[in-house]
Length: 592
Image 1 (cartoon, rainbow, N blue to C red):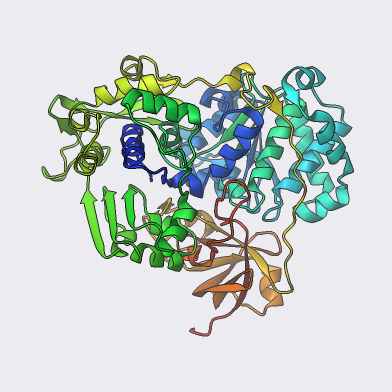
Image 2: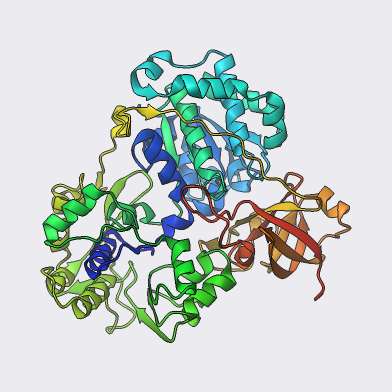
């Protein structure tokens, strides 16, 4: 599921009144690991900083993120960070072009080709080397006596146990498992220590590993031990991949919403929500395969191409009695149907949404917790197009024969649902008035005031053991990622100019030594086979591209490489697919 806030609210209400909590959504594939780690440690499943904080901080630690391709508008803020004297540290297997420098297209120097250097340090950890890297950062902080004892004493829990475990880890373990030297880690740590304020940003490079939750908890440990959280210019920033992925969760799209939310929802709409937790995205695929789930409704997005194990996902879709896609444009997933398949075209966000009460707008929530309006103004492509809201409300009216929810009225006037949301979800009071103000409004975030709504009432230090991936002879670790001509699963072209690829997507980026050891030549066609618990999956005819990536690490574009990601290989706790650490072997293609 990938949609705007009201539609998310309508949809989760419909699903729960129908009698289930089966609400898989896009967060399951990406930042579920972030939410799990942050809720446990600081009491809120989202970031704790503002865009202004990022632009004015002294140190920005960017881990497992490629803003030049995945979050290009962020580059303007990173440029401001540097211009304001801040230091940027890049921690990633690849030193991506977008973190090297930025030529602002709306500034004269950018037009003239004069780029602003961004990252002053790059730490080329190997795939899944982030957790040991962070342990090295923590050891450096402790050895430099750069901790904040007053913050630790007042606001945290579990410090002594955490400290003992960190002290027991050796630099030899850290260097071997991270793939970088003690000297490189200490240099990064020194920048972090000397900075009065610091922010850590991360994306899929941290969230899609078996130990993703542990790694993000270790990010939190770094900020807790230094006290660099809960104040301006310092904190945590999981960078979401597309508009309103965070807003969907705020509106209740989650298979295991807390009892407090369900109680408020039940009171407002006079029904009883089902108490049993539902299916997440991967659970849903398995349930469809087993015949336990027989109807699939896709509200935006491209479930087939975004999910792991493409062939298994396609088989699951075909097992359904009904598949229905509510979408603004066609995608390959619409061709893989159940016994009956429906495509319900809807208005896009740029198109005017005129209902009985007049022009309507929807809202979205960004990665900084800002809720703002989104109002289309273009003439719709067809007068027959309905809004997502009208479609979901129409389905609910046709399905639920006994309900007190005024679905028709909601579809005709979106102000009415905002009035109900403000009584269900904390932070949305006076919703209609506040969202109409320029720029919208910030949702409450207790961490910014050093209020930690956790089980202990404080921010929690956690213990996160090293858990290196064991590779057999000849095996590599593969990560999947986007090309520059791509947004999520939407591919605009076959070029990736930042990585030097033209008119091709079936490529695998390899370390030159790894290629030499396997007698693989540049651009030679190879077959890639993934290995998981005795199972193998093969993707054929990929061109081998020599690239500056750590030895033992490889990369390929998704969705083409998703066929290699095992359905059963998931992050602990969050169940996010481990798309950044797939065990593979490669061989010259038998189909060349």
